[in-house]
Image (cartoon, rainbow, N blue to C red; front, side):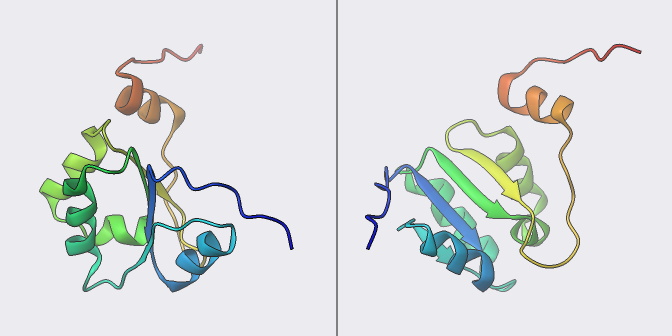
Length: 112
């Protein structure tokens, strides 16, 4: 059986059951399965934990966050928060320009 990739301890995944199972199957250890009722509370715990440099969360988690939590997620660099599409359903896509502004603090000017 192939050996699971090493877990750096710096990444945590928050998401619904299907997303959590997928990340566990690839060897991630810090995976938190959430429901709409628990997502905001678990997200806040992860943000306050201090052990994680990257938070990968389902966009369904983003929808349950308060305005303050969403603002903190979008402006945070430590940990960096990345929202990924849920395994099923609709999803939003963050543009490259918005991502660069949020993560790098630079504005990209696109040629017309």
